[in-house]
Length: 406
Ligand code: DI6
Ligand code: FE
Image 1: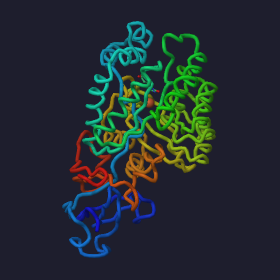
Image 2 (image 1 turned 30 degrees about the horizontal axis):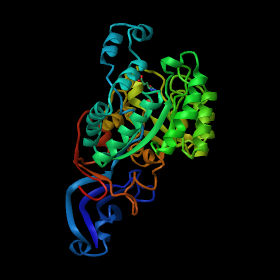
Image 3 (image 1 turned 180 degrees about the vertical axis):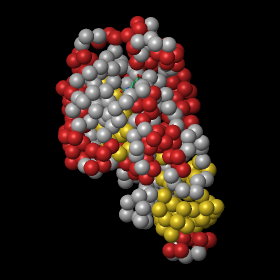
Image 4 (image 1 turned 90 degrees about the vertical axis):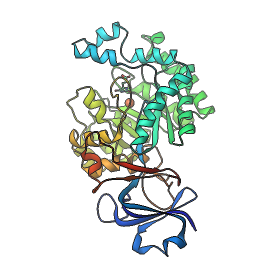
């Protein structure tokens, strides 16, 4: 006997093996849940018995749609302060250098994050997380990277862990020590990479504070050689890697990520065809971040046609961070992925479900409605799934089921 059964729902299973469209649609479907996992998915007409005999609780969804719980697979959700004053200055014509001299930019967030205690970091991040959750997000990735010293990097990762423990959301943590060069290492990038590889990473691994290791490969951040050092150290410790790749210039980031079998390469505005091919061969997911593209006023779009042609799975995420994407709406990112990057509505939804799961190494845990996966799903007041990417700033979430309980 199942714990619960959901009826009178249309299912966007996002399972390629199901249905005859790219949503894996099952009209008039049913989902059975036992022990927090999906026990059965199919058409109601194919249920193996009468509902009341199959499950202790029978829920009627009233013709709503059910999708897998949404997954925000790239965020910098934990940070101190904000950058609203910097935004206002930029709008009045201040240059990046002027802003940096006035104490702005990424290092101002580093200073604010170092100064904040864990409680304050938690409270600020919790509001952002709750906002994501209200739109049906049940899994979120959170990066470190605004500490850039041992103590603060670990503090950020612990706060991220507490966010998962206290909300029941599935939180995946990425250690992003190689995000920017801290002021005390000015002019000594290699020295800082030594600290990341020899001190921070081993501590993160021993204390099991991260599920993956990320880096920012860019002219203004770390070189391919420095990124490779971080990836070698991560691989030795058995941690999978990810990369902020080819966002502002072609650094060969896609290929570098693929060489280390990265879970994902993210941003990718300047990805080359060789990079796309290498990612396809390695199974590295392309994470698209339309919020950063929009907020920075970028004009070069990621090469969606190349990614399609070579069969690279595409995910979509908020990149929630105070400098380049102060966004806490994954539904808005669906809309932007379609309007700005020309993804189809089906690709966009796969980008925050099935492919976002793969970007976190969770493809066998969540991201589809399929037997054996976690019972994380969302009920939506919509007539067709395309509504999720069509509307702007409207939340049709009508209920969230996380691991069986609603
Ligand atoms: N890429 C970005 O756009 C952000 N970080 C990154 O790796 C910028 C982060 C910030 O400005 O605070
Ligand atoms: Fe990012």
